[in-house]
Image (cartoon, rainbow, N blue to C red; front, side, top):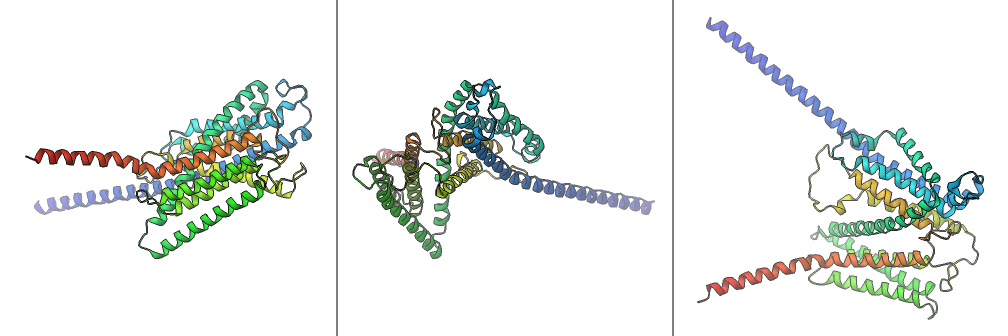
Length: 425
């Protein structure tokens, strides 16, 4: 009996071990399947970013086509009240605003349906990364509906679009400055490496040389005579900002080096150049302006590059949600989304308002000329203010740690003094 009992007990133990092994194998297989699913969903979400970028590019090209050639390609829409008596309210400035509104509606709907997504296996994540046929239908409906709205409503949207474009510019500035800080931190983290220091020094020198050449070139091309006082003011103030940013970056309490200030200097010079280039074509202080009003190959090439820059700026800002997080040390799990879907779509919806303002040069009354973008005194001042904001934000980022640290030092000194006073007889 004792032998049979031991045999039964051994059999039970063997069965339990085999069951536990079976459970472990099943769990391992499920874990492997989940990893495969997460990996596949991750790839889909990363690919989806580029598809949304292509959609945004297509809407930009559509807005340009409607503005410049819509009234000649499409037949007059006499039968539509929304497009006015001769159909002109669906082309040129209002046509751009209608396309922009459609793009805004599409990405706003995508924001409302994905902003709460946190995990790759959630239904909202699958909606963000898939269902492209349904989203194509939604895009078409969003683009068509604004062409049935009255001009008064479109004018109201144009005023709202100005605010949205301003918010987009501010968020883009923060994203660019955070990228510059990351770049500087990346090179400065390896202080012991001579090669890293050499590359950082060479890069900062290149940016500073490019900035100085840009300042000199702008004086030559855009301020050829003393009567060009406004351009002289823009360029001189930009040069002063460069010197101030460099001095603050090299200050002993800040000590950020030359790399970040050099990159920022080149960016500020570019913004100043872009602002002066946006001055009206009849401005006498711009020796590079073509005398005829028709677009030559350089104008067309610059226009296409500008469209590409709009898409790239929107795309890069949309995937950079970390720059706007208060906590940047959060650990990502395997099934977490790789970027914030809601932030991505809201940036693209704001980008729709931004490209509308560029195509109509921030002017809701007059239509821009063919192959032109962001030209006029309004555009010039928007870019100049954007430049000053960029320099101000960067300088605040430099001195903010020092300013925040100052009260702590004062409190420590006061506590030490109190302790000494209490210990003294």
